[in-house]
Length: 218
Length: 256
Image (cartoon, rainbow over all chains, first blue to last red; front, side, top):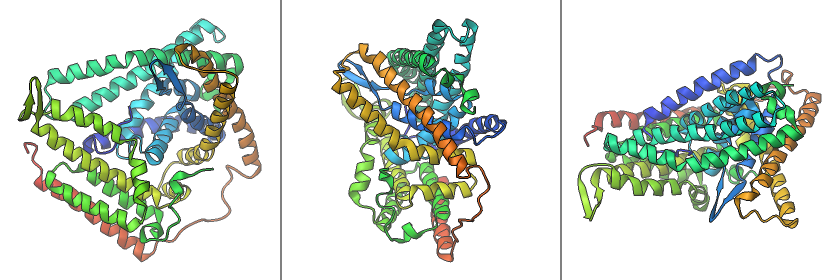
């Protein structure tokens, strides 16, 4: 899902930087409204590193295994720090492992980060069931995880198929988007279940982590 | 800490000595100029410029190859997709499968752009210690929240990675096999534990840093001076980047 360098036209790369810049500005504005904006930085940073590491965990899906994206879970836990966290995580991946790219950093951050922010707001709806309800936490954890990955997959497929092959006809393009999105459905289910299990674990062990950006700066 | 990226950052070449801010501006301009190129006639020039820069950096070829290993898989997917689905002029046909000329040419452009951009990126980050790069980005206007988060995350990334390895080893020693989907609950607890441990550690880190003055204005200035050689280097690379963009505009026509 991380689009590498050289694949996309320059205009799309620059457009990605514009949208990522807008989302970063929005996040930094929310962080800047806190009494001491520096206070939440160590927590958000260590959690950013922890998410980066947690995405290395391989989930067995016989006969193979998959590693998860966790952008929905990241949104749930980090709140308004989620977008900067994803930007930094993708920057690390681009410069350390050449996974993704420098010119496509903005596009990739938008693809992963905007669904993460939406997942955060989606997860807040669990309060309808009451904050301590395990059903509400599990259900909205699932929706945040599956929705975060699903939206990111749709965005990535649309960007890739509509911008790269200049000579592909509209029907083939549409079929390609549908096929690639459908291929992600099983992964969405796995990501959703995993996110639900993690948020239920956190609710039992460290509920403060599910308070999003409020507790991160506490 | 194992900062693999800094393995060759202490060599002594013109590129290593180049002031980081000038280097970032120049090489990022070149990277974006490369991403702008779509005309086949400019590809040899891109390869020449990249080769000169790589030779000047004296980074080992094995270092480059090792870092190109992972992204090549994505390129392989494109190599299957583009020649078959992009274009109209058939080059080779075998039953219902046809290899198209436009798709092959597009693949060539993407492949050269991909390798050149990646190589210049590796030169940029491989010839400057990573912390100096972040400091340079900060002085170029990167917001303090992003700069501080990048520093902290980088500092603790490998430490948390080692924690994960230790916990995975402990799970295996206790008989955890994790060969089917039923293992997901245990793996979710593992991920949750990583998050909880990091969260609690961040409390201690913040308190220790506050005691050392984190958040207070710095009482020293840590500025690196830009000399005339840095400026000349910046000017040359910017001109090369501008030349690529200029020639692309003049030469390129979407029809071919």
